[in-house]
Length: 360
Ligand SMILES: Nc1nc2c(ncn2[C@@H]2O[C@H](COP(=O)(O)OP(=O)(O)O)[C@@H](O)[C@H]2O)c(=O)[nH]1
Ligand SMILES: [Mg+2]
Image (cartoon, rainbow, N blue to C red; front, side, top):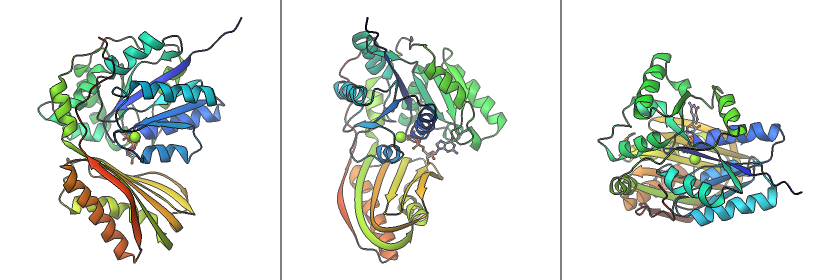
């Protein structure tokens, strides 16, 4: 008798910058240490993803679904999952949908269960909430961004109140209550990838045989589309060569350039850069007014042939955002006397979501 084990698939949702990739990386480290084979699938509206690179340089098996969200590219999600399964036989696949995506229950979880339930055990939907951003009022449903973030929370089965290391105990309590009010069915858990708070609980959930079981929550596709369309979406790759430079300073100046060019901290959903040189690899992010180092391999100093990958998701029209990034890169490189070339870039606003399936 042949026993085929189902692959556990775990969707980690949540708005741009809420900490999904950081958590996936922590989970991956844990499972690799435990010799449990895992794979990761990243997803973005554009190409050349900082996140894919960040995961790949850590030796984790990763596939990406570029050029649109999982829901609108369901067949590609499935192909990538199958490719991972055939080549690496992972027991677990951690999948990170685009941060501006919602309605995942109806468009990804339900079709996975309905059409591929023999191959996959679909874990309850996890959604991360950026605690400092929530404190600042970014979940206010009167705004388009707030509408989208709130729907992500409303459809979740597990809500992780993320980055609790940045807020006080009173705030954690208040935000937990607020989330429970938004979604009384969800399990709400304070979480931090930095301190490891409740990482074990997430691991236990993944290792359990609990399956996703909620019914989808209604969403107004007009408001959802408008919320996505508010964002400019920039992805670009630059090449340069320099004898020795401080890649921390460079990354921070590259991100601050957006603030210097008039974007407010509310406008900037998530801007991130990776700089890869012959001697190091570094990821730095700007979310709201916080700049944080996502990870560094090697020293803080870059040397030799280097590549800069710049992703920015900002409330902006695309042309203005493209010019802002390009002029920032130019300024930062000029200041250091570094010659560089733009390999390729693109900037656009996501189109109206048009899911392959929507099962309710
Ligand atoms: N303070 C703090 N920062 C975090 C935590 N998790 C992630 N971050 C930072 O938040 C930024 C966005 O994280 P990322 O995982 O890229 O978010 P994603 O867009 O949801 O994938 C990065 O700079 C991370 O280092 C956390 O638990 N605490
Ligand atoms: Mg990410």
